[in-house]
Length: 222
Length: 108
Image 1 (cartoon, rainbow over the protein chains, first blue to last red):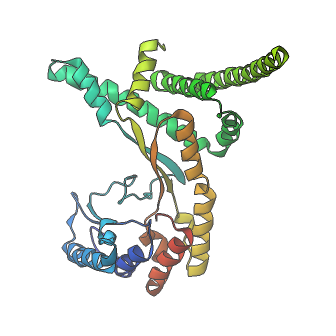
Image 2 (cartoon, rainbow over the protein chains, first blue to last red; image 1 turned 180 degrees about the vertical axis):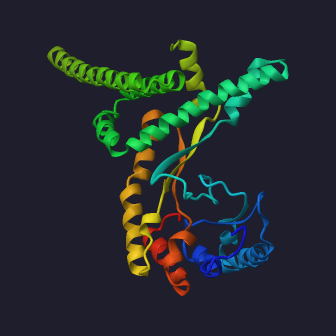
Image 3 (cartoon, one colour; image 1 turned 90 degrees about the vertical axis):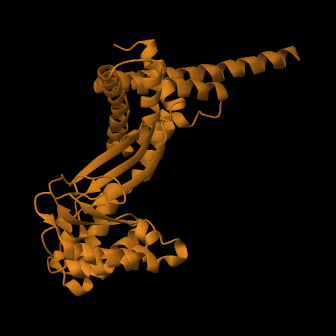
């Protein structure tokens, strides 16, 4: 409502404090201004009172209602960050957004680089950000595949009771992750994942066979 | 090409340098749920969000378990409710919010 109020906007804004107080996981956001059109000061005045009302409605819960309410200027239409996330009108029917946190990674990369000029710093940050982003992309694509992958993975998770097998599993999956991060060749990634999991399953089977043989041998000796 | 240094570097990023996935956010358009009947609108919203996001948390947890990379939050975002509720009489806007969010217990 950065230019004015539509008929339902007042009622919607009035309902925000109660909606935030009766729900646990709901967040809300309102856009009251933009660089192009300026700030709707009526909306600003209204939202000031709404924020106070949201805090009062949840005063028995550390005023959490106000923390779940965002007032924007220049709200982007594809914002996935809470509490102001919303799905803009220009977006497709359904999208997956992944937020990756990697300040520790950038810090470590810069500390390893030692003394360098601003161009080198920019280059290190750019290369590190690329690797971090690739990890996020991999997770997003896996999430988008959803239940198809769950079916495949559940087959292999049933063997995780063996310590050695679990360690091997962790190593293999991290190797696969690195493949994705560093090459971004998804077809190659999928085929390598399948191959690695076949190897892992084969090792599980061989381990079980070995344990059976060992048991029989010990039994014979005793 | 993949080399051992790059592989170890990525493992180190996850294990030692706090690389994690903060959120997976599923954005769902509710524009096709617009209806002048408040109950129908609520039903459409409920059905659509459940259809798209019913396995979101489970999928996130399984990806996290499988790749060893922490995924902290799983959540959804939707079309601004002001647009979806524009077709309803203004006095029942609150009902739309409360009905849909209470039934879902999700972020809207």
